[in-house]
Amino acid sequence: MPWQAIGVGSGSTSKRPPARGRLLAYLRERGWERVTEARDAELAEAFPDVSPHARRAALLQSGVALDPLVEGVRQDSYEHLEASLAALLELYQGAERVRRGSIRAVVITAREHAELATRNHRTGPAKRAEKTEMSLWLRIWLENPPLFPQWVELRRQARPPV
Image (cartoon, rainbow, N blue to C red):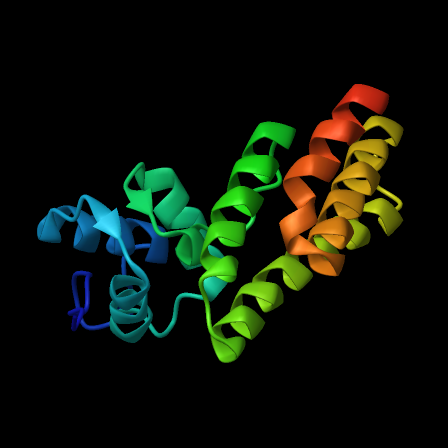
């Protein structure tokens, strides 16, 4: 979608609306009820200047339903973490080898982000404990995805989340 220069007079520079706003407007124009992987690829092509992280944040903000690989692993709560890992497990169990690799890559990235938060000196003790626990959940999912639902249930019984 081309953007024209905004401004008055000969000395003005070209400015585009913020990426998040442009992406959300694009979603509204299309009236999508769900963003599938194909639609996410369309968004990536339409907005090459928007990082995958910023695109995902805008999609989460939009309130539109997202396919599991588009939504990724949500780590804002234990409930969202468990739900997103369960959705990815469902995809994983029915997937071929290459697709399983793509699903694992999403979970690996989420684990790396959780582990980075545990090492950040600005992360407070409560958040560090939460991210440490979440990184454990992610490691268990990666080690044995089909076992994860039973493991998380046992983990809750043994040590309720903070």
